[in-house]
Amino acid sequence: MMEVKKVLIVEDNFEIIKVLKKRLEDNDFSVDVAEGGYAVLGFLKEENGPDVVILDIMIPERNGMELICSIKNKWANTKIFIFSAHDEYKRKMHLYKEYVCAFFSKVDGIENLIEAIKDELAKQTG
Image (cartoon, rainbow, N blue to C red; front, side, top):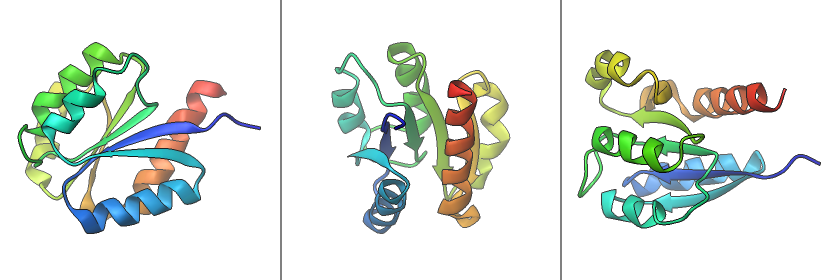
């Protein structure tokens, strides 16, 4: 039996949270949600971080780009996936390539994101 992987969704759109959380749980992930930058800072107080953070760029209280370094400084082994409606940030991803596994536009769909997460986590264990 594989250990349950923890995912932190950083997103402020309730509809996306609902669908993403359900799809992840259907794929046997344990899911927490932070709806803004301050909530992420609260999670960062925990010693053991999630296996994966799904990070929206445009969230209340903090820009997702600002949070990338904070997350990696605290939880070095956590995998970060950007899930954003703002494609213009994709061009800046090379600046964060050592921190971010992949960038997904929300129009790419949740299934592609979940498959990429499963592939990345399988690399760790296999």
